[in-house]
Amino acid sequence: MKVKNEDIVIPGDIINEDCLKIDKKMKIIIGPGLKKVGNEIFITNSGILRKKNPNTFWVDFYQRRYVPAKGESILGVVTNKSSEALKLDIGASEQASLSFLAFEGASKKYKPEVAVGDVIYGRLLAAGSDVEPELVCIDHNFKSDRFGVLKDGFIFNCSLNVVYKILNSSCPLLQLLGKEIKHEIVVGLNGKVWVKANNCEDTLAIANAVLKCEFLSNSEIRTMCNEVLNCLKGMS
Image 1 (cartoon, rainbow, N blue to C red):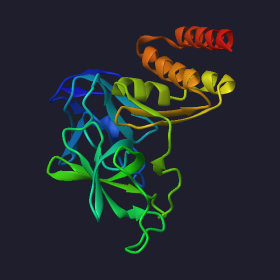
Image 2: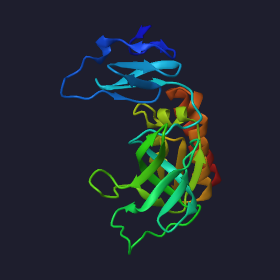
Image 3: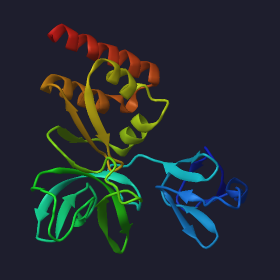
C-alpha cells in the first residue's frame, strides 16, 4: 500500500512518489522505520509516517531498543579499554568501538585520558546490520565541537519517544527548566540523557521531569514543570 505523510503505516507499505518529489539538488534523508530498496522507500516499523522539511522522512513508533544509525549523536558508557580503542555501551544489541585517534588533537603519542565508566558523547561514523557501530568525537571539520568525555553529572535511560519529544522545538520542557535551574544537559538519540546541575536535588528533579513528560501534552508539561520548580523552591 502506498502511503503519505502523517498516515498510519505498517511494514511493507511504500511511500507515495508524490511525497518524494523534491528539488533535484537535495538528497532524500530517511530515518528510523524506513529502508530504501531501488527507487522505492519501504516502511519497516508500524507507526506514523513523519516528514521534516521537504526531504527528511521517518516513522514515529514506540521503541526502547536503540538501532544504531550513521550520523546520529549518541551517549555511551565506557565498558572496556585497550591500548588502541574503547568499547562503549550505547544501549544497542552490541557495543560500539571508539578509537583513541578519533578525538580532536589525538595522536599515537597523545591520547585523551578516559577510564572505564566514563560517559562519552560522540557521533556514529559507521553503523549497519553487518557493521560494528563505530563512534568518533569529532565533527565533519575534525573539531571536537561539543563531543568528548562528559565529566561528573548523572546519566539515565529513557525511551526513544521521550528523546524525540524533548528535542522537538515545540516541547517547552527544557526551556522552562533552563530558566530557573542552572544546568547542563546532553540528549543522545539512543535514549541516554546526561544531566549536570549545581546539586543533587536539581539534577534528580530534571531527570524525573524528563521521564515524566512522555505521555503529557505541552500544557501538562508546563504544569508539571511549575510543580517541580515550586517543590525545589520549598526545599531551599
